[in-house]
Amino acid sequence: MTAPRIAAIVQARMSSSRLPGKSLTKIAGRPLIWHVVHRLKASRRISEIVLATTVNPADDVLADWAATEGVACVRGSEDDVLGRFALAAEACDPDIIVRVNADAPLIDAAFVDAMIDAMIAEDADFVMLAPGARALHDGVDPMSRRALNLMLAEAREDPVAREHVTGWLKLNSHRIKVARMTPDPAYDFEGARLSVDTPADAAFIEAVYDRLKAQAGEASLTDLIALLRRDTALLAINGHVRQKAATQTAGTVVIRCDGGHALGLGHVRRCLQLAAALRDGAGLGVVFATMGETDAMAQVRAAGFRVIEKPAAAGERDWIAAVLHETGAAALILDIRTDLSEAEVRSLRDTAGLIVVLDDGSPRRLAAHLAVYPPVPQTRALAWPNGETDLCIGWGWAVMGGAVWRGARPLESGRATLRVMVAMGGSDPQGLTQRAVKAVAAAGRRVTPVVAIGPAVPFPEGVADACQAAAPDAEILFAPPSLMEVAATCDLAVIAYGVTAFECAHVGTPAIYLGLTADHAASAQGFDDAGIGINLGVASALNERKIADAVLGLAADGERRRAMAAAGRLAIDGRGAERLAQEIARRVEATASAAISRAKAG
Image (spheres, rainbow, N blue to C red):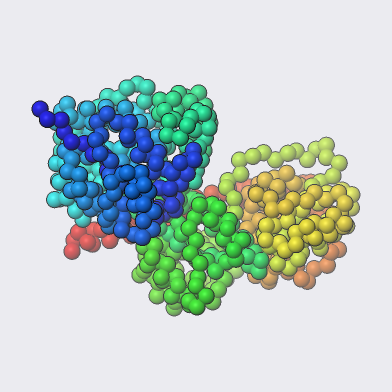
């Protein structure tokens, strides 16, 4: 009997929506795609490896990499993975095809060979684990050429087959002959993510290599399992990342927001938190569309998200439409303060499918499908004459600039002085930091200022020197990575109203709010009404004595501070980004399912 011809077809592209440039992301010093191919070469069954990528010019680098490494490469449609597999199969003409995801750097050649052996032994079309069996393995599915031909004949337009290929076989296993494999007990483990879809996944694999002290491509899967059994804490690195189901359609969300010295960084910070929840928790890709400043967008890129900047000559509406078209976006989130009109947003509804506005009081909110607000006075005053927009109003929908706080607050007892955080935002556009520090210092020796100078504050050293001169015992922090962590070490805070107000409430730090605008002051009143903090109004109308009196009064009233802390923690549980991401994902999936049903009916 002639041995079957077996080829591994590796699906890869650069335009991953959850981790841009994923295939060439470095793991242990080598590109992710290198790890996959290197480990497949150890298989005793696979005779040929073919890279199946797309005709998108962005994937030229993958084709070049394949040529350099001596790997065959086939290029096809970006939106049709099944079609690319068909082209690759025609090129190498195998009897058995091993479908390989290019995001699985810990592929185990021995396990792959065991899967192929099980298929051959039963002349099967596909292989799955025996009922009750478990194995920590990811990214590989052997199938017969017959199975591929069946999909091409009967599921050519099925979105699961087109995007996930073997996902269709798993859902239709009754149509094919399936071998049931009982894996070696050494592979028995559950609860770890081995694929690299997000920055957290890459961090997990890097941590594994570091702990195993392995060379690139040589981290044994069985050694990894032994390591995880000894140290389950490693699972927390990417344990929050959701694996997309085979039936989930791909989706990209465009987030339109800006940031910089004039606007501050609050919109960017909260949108980054929402973006992480969409990517890691909801399995959606995220792209930022921005007119923001370079420093602000550097934070977005550092978090692993693609940024598309507005060309100088383009109008905002036309540019957003172009971004939606380029990315094939399923949803658009607007967190802006530009003059984009209601009519312009309405013209984008069909393109985006779902439009969400955050804390937006402008008329464009009336053209959104979903609008999200905290329960502040301005929200109650808004009218919704057309009734087309669904509303999410409440503290539970508040999107903060940081993750859920899981730390503990230090006890006040025994302190000679109380710590007062002073934070005027990422850019402090009105130069309030020095004024606030002087006011805190004027409250007397009972308090010690803890000054957070934001990353976009001009001349930060000069600001620090001025603060130190006003309060020699002040603790100066330059661009702290987490204001929540700083706030949690303080007994109260003096802050410019913004995202920081939500973060202070979440960690239970009573705050005194200074409004940069009348609108900010009105929003701060919502926190005051809820017993979370004290609203002093618009900062430009305040003198230092009024701020100092508020600090002194709150510092002297421990019972009031404790009541405010409890009210803040009760109101803001920190899961607003998670809730909103899940709601967006639910709506995106419902819209996609409806479109598929209409297409099948037509």
